[in-house]
Image 1 (cartoon, rainbow, N blue to C red):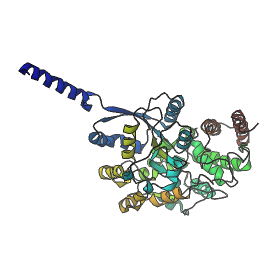
Image 2: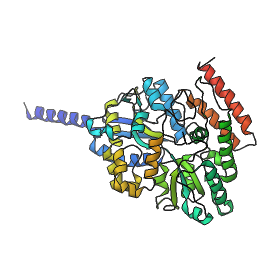
Image 3: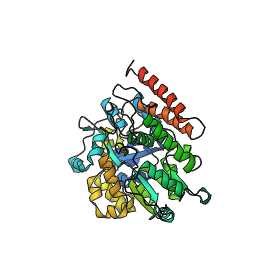
Image 4: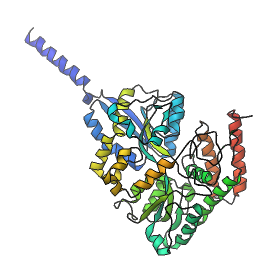
Length: 440
């Protein structure tokens, strides 16, 4: 072989090597659809560590507000469009979509330590024992109360308050002239927004979405009691514009010292107690979610999880990332980079066993107990045909819950009566259930 030939071979080998290198743009690109909350933003920042140790994989993020995310991924999954390789979904979607074959089943490596996952969270993402998503963080619901305002008003609340006690306390601490409102609750319409909270209120006042014949129950006394209380609290003791407030808006209000009481997701506990972002850090008591006439169904159960749509052609790389993002390794990375207060909780037994985590998160035990007590298979006073605490696990609920959520939200902005609103909601849901052939 001549010098020129040898030189040509070297050039060819070098060119092939450069073309096969991830640096040349041939790395597997994973498109990830996710929600714009604090834990997910942290994941995006720390995912550079994953890309550094997995140079053959590149991550592209599509970050959306919760309602927009649900619209985008639902459209993508039902049309099999294939825009995303990884979707951030919840305990509502995972079993329904998994059963329909829209998600790839996930079988993590032994090192992932599946037995370490909290049983209620693991079960919520499974169908017939097979996982269809891995939990990034889990949550239930709880009550957050300003301890300084409680003391000033001379109020004592138990660790397990009732809604009537919450209403009384909110009324006493409601000081709008001083920029403090008695209570903040989700008012933004949507099955995952105001309906999440309202359904737990209905449960604990003895109500349900459907009876055993799948007939809607929205015109019952339990629904009227729950909705009347909810509207009364937000109209008279809540902040202006409550109908536009979801989780993120109320987190901002509470952290700014504008709310005396906030009933919402347990995940908020870590954020309201951060001195760098919350004016009320160190001044918050964490209590169980309020109950009505019965304790059942007061705690919702949710997890934001990562799943692989069946349409993805990059499933192996996607599972590699999902296992990393939901692993104990990732939790330790967050703790090392941002402290134990920033660690996503609600997924692993080992997290709650960590003394540093419990010290950094005053809400940890309340959260653990709330998740453990949530029972999607038995959340209503009377038997229900559906599974779910703050939703009914049927494909139609996403549309049903959103329509009813919109009607409830209008109550906060008009003089319509609760009776009229619930009667209209009953008719709408009845029509949708008939159209879906649940009954004639």
